[in-house]
Amino acid sequence: MTATRTALAWEYSPAPEATDHIRLKDRYGLFVGGGWRDAEAYEPTINPATEEPLAEIAHAGTAEVDAAVAAAREALPRWQRLPALERGKYVFRIARLIQERARELAIVESLDGGKPIRESRDVDVPLAAAHFFYYAGWADKLRYGLAGREVGPMGVVGQIVPWNFPLLMAAWKLAPALACGNTAVLKPAETTPLTALLLAEICQEAELPDGVVNIIPGDGSTGAALVRHPDIDKIAFTGSTGVGKDIQAATAGRDIGLTLELGGKSANIVFDDAAVDQAVEGIVNGIFFNQGHVCCAGSRLLLQESVAEEVVEKLWRRMGLLRVGDPLDKNTDVGAINSAEQLQRIEALVDAGEREGATRRTVACTLPERGYWFPPTLFTDVAPAHRIAVEEIFGPVVSVLTFRTQAEAIEKANASAYGLAAGVWTDKGSRALAVARGLKAGVVWQNTYNQFDPASPFGGYKESGFGREGGAAGLRPYVRLT
Ligand code: NDP
Image (cartoon, rainbow, N blue to C red):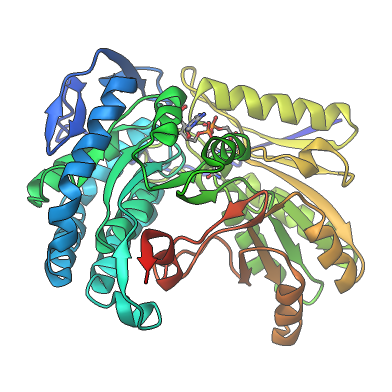
């Protein structure tokens, strides 16, 4: 059964972010050894809100991956020998330059990825700068952060980032790697390479020594070549569990560091003593932030039976107020789906939800004619075995399940192959702590959701991967201790 609600017609005047000051190049090459190189092949990157090409982007093949790894290897001894305080200054400079170019980076992130400008401006870009600031501070304190032991870098690190937080994921990976004295080869996602390439420009502006950071756009085959390169000392990957497993198999038996930050199907648990209106805002932020393209999205909403009806009705009403459309409009809450492929995946899972008997409600809003869009959607009457309760949808779709007792809430929340994050909504601190202890999730938020801080480690259990990014724990994968 499908129900729809027409978005309430709140009259907002359009508030588009100006783009006339953005100067994208027609074509971006590979950033290798501190300079730009031509590639054998180029592919356009598309604005998912308009389907218009934004620029031609180099596609790194095997020989180009080799060149990038060789440049990183050559740069390593000098970078490693640099006094830690000096390394920290470079990392700090990158943070300052991100701040200086914040507006441009936010606009390009929204153009290339489809996320609302409000989010790229207020979350992605400031957090990316914050990560560089945070790890700049660690560069000369590694011995203290790591139990007083002698600390050396892993060496040349290969880093593969996804399309949902392109600049932020690059920052999560590069900032600790550089602070610890590693050199890096970073591969951005095929659909969102632009802010990583602007970050390459920032590395040049910061006068980072040549070859310390190399950025090579491409597709899955580029990532696969990087993973299999024999001269890589560590791989850091964020993306799907399927590719994560492939990487784990490809690196098995090699003396190589590996961290995998993979998918999730995170439970957002609302108890009957929670402040319901506040919880509804948290549920909305948990699932509709970045169109639900969030590995820790609160996509499984677990409601205590006694408040389930009230929460669902309030949530449904609130969903009708979400403004879906132009990512560059400052009033937009839900932007474009990142790619045609991702839209197809969302549609297939939503169809499966209906076929399996769940009740679908989708906000009926006027969507732009071009581009990739999916309106906010809520499923009730969801059984734990339904695909929409089990699989990562990675879109603006929330599945509601119910529970009666605290023990049942914990059991249902943990009944997932994933274990990335969870939310607990309750008035009682003791209950929040008890539930958090019972949850097999890397991050548990209480009475809030999707809060990030560079000092706070992030990562998963089970099929959500292993290793932590952020905080002092995020240094550990980038160092060898002696
Ligand atoms: P992928 O795991 O394919 O992409 C993540 C990154 O890995 C991209 O840079 C990608 O390159 C690269 N890559 C792809 N194949 C390989 C490979 N064999 N070896 C090394 N690197 C590779 O995710 P998708 O983009 O296909 O998204 C599929 C699903 O994954 C989504 O629907 C979502 O459920 C989940 N996902 C989870 C993310 C998370 O943060 N946990 C992030 C992104 C997706 P390229 O993009 O150029 O192909």
